[in-house]
Length: 539
Image (cartoon, rainbow, N blue to C red; front, side):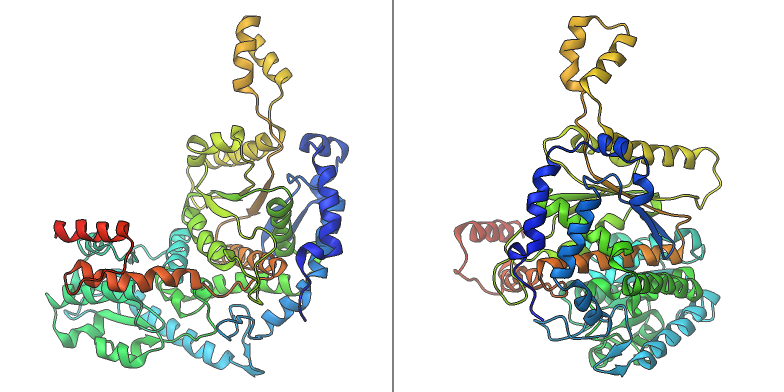
């Protein structure tokens, strides 16, 4: 079923007309007019609570957005993804991060076989049964990967560090910059370090350069025969894995239908199982599955990923917001904004539709952010009083994973106060009252006034969980995955390819040869040629 041209749909035209009314709205007035607005515009699912009442919307806006979703065939496209259709059109494959059916075949046996091996392996390492070449138990695990093979497991291991095994330190190396690997190797002992090399093809340039360097470092201490005790692989290329020196019995496969930025649910999650234990990893998967089922079965009107995605469409395409700031008020989620950058911008940072024609409106906004309360003392100034309006997602847990008194109440107070401040702002009259209380003279008040006024009317969502744990983290990630799919469906783009990352990789291969002096090419622009020459001279 071909989706209609977005801007030609009746729902889109109705939303454009509705947008003219929204110009006159003030969020503080909308709350005054609707005492039950919070109840009307909040919902729960899979252990996650969403308050979307502080967006510049009313009930009519929501209904019009739901009409847009239906006119863009969201429900049948959701069902196609969930049943394993090959919705990744340019790569002609499915995107099975939510289901276990492919081409009408139940692939659960394959999936559970890998999960069983992950369980057995993680138990052996965590118990000390798996030892290094000198018979000592493993104390450090170094995951070598990039993109989805790094961002996902790294973020999750950091987020779940309260549940981690204390005598097993986790390290993640992704950057081809040697400073990254060198710094990590300086902290670990070759006798007690296990390396996980994560690359589907075992040919990814950055990953394999780091892996070969780690291999050389290890062979400065151990023997070739010892590699199998210190290196395992997450890959599908058994030939290259064996050539590297890894026992293929210690290769954990995943398949073409596992997309990179959705791969944390697959064998790519091996570091998570090692860090928090397989049972906790299973809870993580179960939390994601609970959100998958919510997305699959809940009506659009009460479907959390659908509403979150549609509100994002409203903010992006009708209110003109060019970025979204992610503000987790939980330090263990400090890597979550970076994780969402890949998830959303690599998925929906596209300029052509599925049929290859140019999109007829703006697609993915820039995703950025940092943990609260750090962000308040850095960039919140721009969010409060800057010239751009940036929607914000506040994320918090109602109970902490620590026992320090006073901290959590202060943290939550800041989270809730900031969302209120962005919504309310501060009027000139309110500023005058405050300054008069301070005893400021009238002339000075008028001088100070413009600098202390906050326009408010800044939209935000607040996403809460009772506690950050494996289950709620799984549900939170799945919430944003499905939100991303909803928006890609509305824009009629392929969420599951990422050709934009390839061009620079291709060009870099020849430039590298020029930098190390193997040959010289004259096909570059004069800027690039000049930069290459400067680097050659520096060598």
